[in-house]
Structure formats: C-alpha cells, structure tokens
View 1 (cartoon, rainbow, N blue to C red):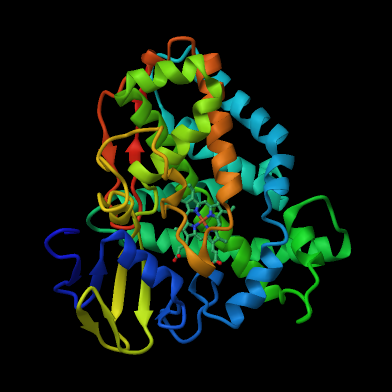
View 2: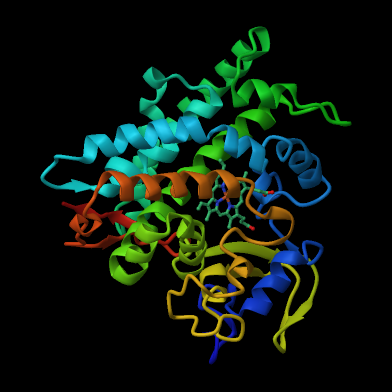
Length: 360
Ligand code: HEM
C-alpha cells in the first residue's frame, strides 16, 4: 500500500495513510486532524486542545521516567513470581501466564487496587483479548464487557471517595492531589482516566512482551547476543516496537479540507493512521522488513504515536518488558525451550499480537 496506494479511500469511505511522512504529518497537526470522534468525548485520547492540554498537563506530572523507575522493584517482584510459576510446567501459554498478568498486576497495584479486588479487572482484560481475537458473534462478549465496565467505573468512584478521606501511597491518591490552574480533575474525569489506563496499559504492554518473545525465538543470533550482552535488551525492545508494533493504527477526523500526498481530503472525513505501516517504510528505515537491533534511527519509530497524544505510558511499558525479558533469560537457562508450536494471532486492525503463545 505504501507504494501503490499511499493515500487511499476504502469502501467504508475512510481514508488511510501508510507512509511514514504522511502518518507523521497527520499525528503532528492536531489543528487539522482531530482525535475527537464524537461530540462528547470522555477519554484524554479522544480530546483536542484546549481540553486535552489541561488534562495532559495534569496527568503527565505522574508519568515520568522517575515514576517508572520507582516501580522497578515491584515490577521485578511480580515478574519473578510469575516466571517461577512457569518453571516446571510441561506446557503453558505465555500470554495468559505472563504477558497479561504482568501489566495487569503492575497497573492495578499502582492504582491502589488490592489483589483480592483484581478479579473483575482480570476478567475484563481477558474479554478484551477474546473480543479482539474473535471474528463472529461478539454479542456475548460485548454484553459481559459492558456490565464489567460499569462495575469497574463504580469501583473507581468508590476508591476516589475512599482516598479523598484517607490518602494512600497510590496513583488514585496522587491523581487526586494533582493541582492545576483549573483546579485538578473532577471525579468523572478521574474515573474516565483510570479506566483509560486499564484499556490502554494492559493489552498493549502484553502484546509488546509476547511479540518480543516471538521475535527472539525467530532470531536465535539476536537471542544469543542478548545472553552475552544483557544491556542490549533496550535496543531489542525498541526494534520490536518498530518491527511488530503492538498498536498498528489510530484514527483522526479532518477538521478542514487538506491535501495529503496529492489527494484532497474534505472536512469531516475520517482517516485511519497506520503506525505499523509507517514503521516499515523503506523511505525512512533501510531494509525495513529486517529485524535489526543496530539500526541507527530506531527511536524514530511511531509505535507510541507522535505529537500531543504521544503515549503517557511509554516508560512504564518499556520497563515492564525489559525486566520480564531479562528475568526470562536468567531463570530459563535454555530459552530455546520456548518453542512456538501453534500461533494464534488476534484478529484486529488496531492491535498486533497473539491470542496465545504455547511454550514448553
Ligand atoms: C496513548 C501506544 C502502553 C497510557 C497512546 C497512543 C499510542 C499508544 C499509539 C496514542 C494514540 C493516538 O495518537 O491516537 C501504546 C503502546 C503501549 C502503551 C504500544 C505498550 C507497548 C501504555 C501504558 C499506559 C498508557 C502502560 C499507562 C499505564 C496511555 C495514555 C495515552 C496513550 C494515557 C493517551 C495520551 C494522550 O492522549 O495524551 N498509547 N501504549 N499506554 N497511552 Fe499508551
């Protein structure tokens, strides 16, 4: 598509952009390309300035590299516990036993949800993966997922009331204490933000971890190099983000007529923005189809988007996967034991990952 139909209107009347420069243009020009898909959008991801700016300046105070580093001991403890449980098992599914529980436990812990209250969060995440993996008859998943969503939002409201009376050392208390010119978050905004973290922070990180294990299994020389030089893990993760981007696409609406790649796009038309395709654009990444941890311009990838909506969880997600991969290499002396027997990819145009990754 990058070569033959770089800017293309599909049968659903949505435009699609695939080339790196076009994708970057759309992501960085929020005055022309809106994230607001409907009139009343409650998630930061779907807000435009000035509302987005207010939200973002408050939230970003808590999503710093320092914050992520502060969580390292807890992430290590969760990783050790999950990987120890893997050992000795005849065969297990890496997605269910590590990739999903890791970000789920880390994020719920950080928010302040005690382990005994985790179950509905776990069920909701499983449903999301199923929903993304399933091609037909999704009504049953949708109904259960909507009921759970209401339950989780009520739970967050309960937590907010509780932490307002008795602050603790957790993210909900920290978000309540964020001060801004505008007076901080309202309760409704906080509930929506906590829920977005669950939506945006679990499945994405899970797919990055699974995609990293899969890619290492396919590239034994890189795996060996990583064993000899554990510090190369960050390069590996960045190249997986480019090569197998967990978030493949995002969405914008055109606010006023604009030209992209010689095509006139009218005000009000929707655009699918293909991050994954941009990350394999030969015009930017030499031998883009090759997994190469030494490429010079790796950080240029758009796996976390670009512009005002650039992912807030970037430091946390990378750290979780870094600690998990390092520990997998340490605890499982023969990483080659991880054998891809049967791959079940998820069926999604937004996310790229596997429904399961059987290992033995
Ligand atoms: C936004 C990817 C993990 C929180 C985004 C966007 C992308 C993305 C592509 C922007 C979409 C757009 O421009 O329309 C990813 C990937 C992840 C990941 C690939 C893991 C590998 C996380 C985690 C958290 C998180 C762990 C939080 C704990 C957010 C938030 C936004 C966001 C709050 C909205 C930012 C804004 O609108 O200003 N993410 N994400 N993400 N992400 Fe992530």
